Image (tube, protein in one colour):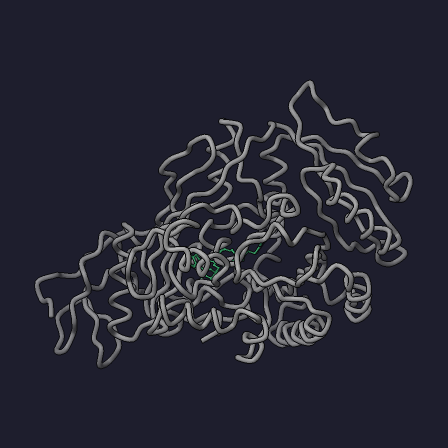
Length: 484
Ligand SMILES: Cc1cc2nc3c(=O)[nH]c(=O)nc-3n(C[C@H](O)[C@H](O)[C@H](O)COP(=O)(O)OP(=O)(O)OC[C@H]3O[C@@H](n4cnc5c(N)ncnc54)[C@H](O)[C@@H]3O)c2cc1C
């Protein structure tokens, strides 16, 4: 028991908070002054915040559907703080999860929330330690956007970027990280070379393809179940400074899918995505492709677009800097925040559909998804090669190619009842997806049962459970995923 440490008052993000120094395992509460039975927290370089406002904020995420209030938020001042907190939690039966920031997680179903324990605000550790010709060694709380700001002056970028780059490196490495470059480079977890991980045992371990491989394979797309990623060496590739984006419309789904498949097979573009969009005459399909270039070496539009079957007169071509292309969703997000829609519930569903089943599955789902259920949220549809994927726990269909098919819903009206109804619809679609050999991309809102998770990780469920026993035997980490 420690009685020598007195409470400290400090100013954090504008709020005056009291930092606790004691934990009472009987009342399972925190204290800032000595009380019988209380145990001293290990000395921290950062802070453990227990004030109501911080805990309430940590019970929020982008989904605005699930709210679990943690007992505390750790703002780590060092990697050792995370080691100490995981060990402390393990010893006293608490749970721990990492999150992009306090209430700033982009999960949509409470994946980074913790009821009986501590959320770690990973944004507190967000330094870039080293950038060399082929990689960057960074803290996992860093956002991809800030990494890109540092690498682009050197003519370099991570090869695969998510559509929205204000996500944390640890957050997307925990789920996979897909984007329009995945057909060429794989997921972001296929482009991480090395990581420092605090396992559920409270051990700080470096892992890579060549060192502690079982941990490396478990943590990539491991949904936070085996360790907190604290640092990552991320692959960098050379990129030209400019990007030319092409949009074109299709009325026919099969023609659209066939052109997308052709484009990823031939590799004419550097980025291939697409959307289902609403038009006056119903749903249509929009191709979105990008070619990077250096000034003076502009892309040959005619050659790039030759033989594609989009509707005449629908082509739009836009040039921008590479950074503005990568950061293209920032103004959209800013607008949604300004009108309050960012705060609405987001019962998203992301799925990976085997290529042969894609046309019929998409038709079937669209037929049961009226536009009113989307709340003007986008529907993504684009292909990638499965052979590029290397992380065993990033579950995808078998076969040569698959499509990402995402219903990025906003619940309007933004009521809990409507959000719950859409989450239930997501589950019904997941059942249909499973029937065609598809897999869920587990970032959105689906209420998963134990049987659903078992099915999701097949044929690796036993391996997943074995890794849990090896790296987090007391089930300390990331309860919000609802797997164990
Ligand atoms: C607007 C928007 C656009 C998106 N676009 C894409 C996209 O194009 N492609 C794509 O793949 N995804 C996309 N996503 C989904 C996104 O990848 C997930 O939400 C992901 O969880 C990353 O979000 P985050 O950084 O906020 O992490 P969080 O949501 O905070 O964390 C995600 C999970 O990882 C755990 N975690 C967080 N940090 C760590 C860490 N350091 N170590 C171990 N576990 C950790 C958390 O506990 C949680 O379980 C998008 C989401 C939004 C809201």
